[in-house]
Image (cartoon, rainbow, N blue to C red; front, side):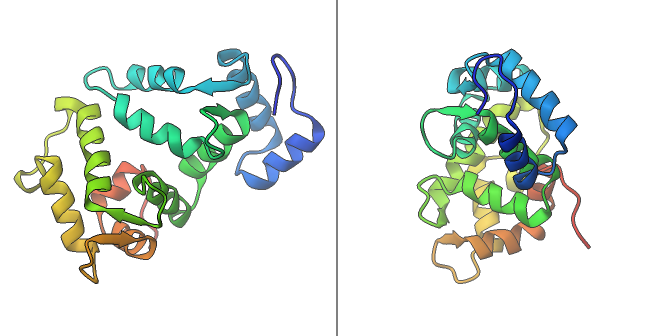
Length: 189
């Protein structure tokens, strides 16, 4: 989708309008900006990480950027195309609470087996803590990644099987202000 310097075709535009929350004008602007930054039409992991480093200069976002990249790269070819980028951006910026939580579940479910284990969540939470560095003042019961993960599992793992199903994660996340805030969304009433 979008060779160097090209515009979106009518078919591509129609497809993106159907699968995102962006209108034609917004899609054209996002595509122009994407192609300016990624003339090859694809974003490499290294470039993606560099972008994250600009937003988190006081921490190390490398691991977290790697995890996010893997969710954006839906076909797992090592690149983020414009379509992959704009679809993920649409969900994370304008999606419903359930869509955002579903996307977040995919971020935490590192092996894509349909469950989040404590180790998978620990990997992500460690990456988040490393990314924000000392910028965040945390309560004593959440001041380490391990404490945060144990607290999350105590609240969400309803059947106590040591892993979170998609349903447990989504239901539990809706009750956890930290996760909702991390997704930068308002809780639906």
